[in-house]
Image (tube, rainbow, N blue to C red; front, side, top):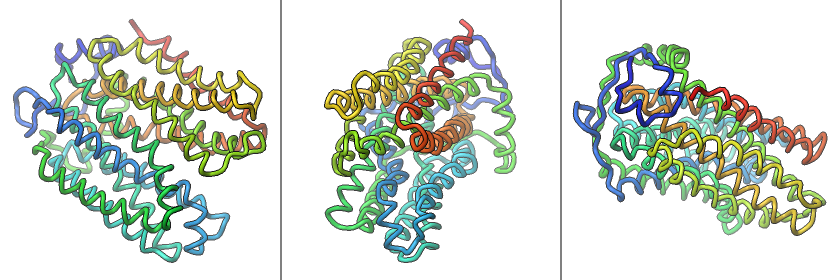
Length: 425
């Protein structure tokens, strides 16, 4: 596949130098998948899709701060508590590879609403569970169904005109990042007022509202891909091999999101430790600070639309490295150190959001009929990095404290930046 000049001009600089190939011909954009210019999103629809992305993505994180109480309530052994979070992550990873690509094959509105409907069933099952097996099956299903968020993002990109696609993606991703950052403190707050069951019931009710709203408001979009499902999944390997922009951008975000995941896995341990001695409520309030970093998403989208993807990417990668460095500028346990940790949370979240949006802007320019598969591969790659770094960060902290964990966190964006320096002009 040769990318049209109008798309190449505004894509990432790598896309300008390495012409990609693909397993299927590119389709044109448009609400119904037919030939013609892309549908322009109204500000109301863009906000609706951003809100839906945030609310759906939050389902992945509600259980994380509640794993202990949930395990006790359902009779899950203490040494198996981690399965509550791990199975949700495994489900999400499976969904990225085997459900998200369906966005290139199945009418998008119906697919998204169906996946959100499945999340309603899974959330209700989790809330009603009183024994381990039903809850763990529901946790796996929540992960799979939550990949609806990664169907919403390429759908929004397909509805947007080329000249404002970065802005649209950035706005939707800001909703997603807000969902990630707010889910944990919100679930902790609700559970303290009532119980962990209520968290899942309220989320299920919210998903019903989201599904009905999207069913009524989203336009139809029928992909032009003629592959079977088996052919669609088989094409993933071909796409990864033949799309250098995808591989490069996926590696950047692998490093970025791995550092992000390490920071948010280990920081609560640091804050609860003898140095700071914060309560769970204090840690939840601290987590809200990082939400400010989500402002990077719309900024990054606008920079990408103006052809500034490369400097925006460099700034995003270096921001994450700086975030880890500034946590060492004051003695651990001091008020200044706590403030610097808060600043680091904002800077790291800002940097990760910056590179995420510029990368998606780049890969979405590679072909309208490929976006769901490209997005699934992109997300799955750095999702692996996030899962690995969470375990590695916790181990490093247990062995050598924040210094050991933050050294790994710093090394990740440094490696990403060294690879960035090899990007062709």
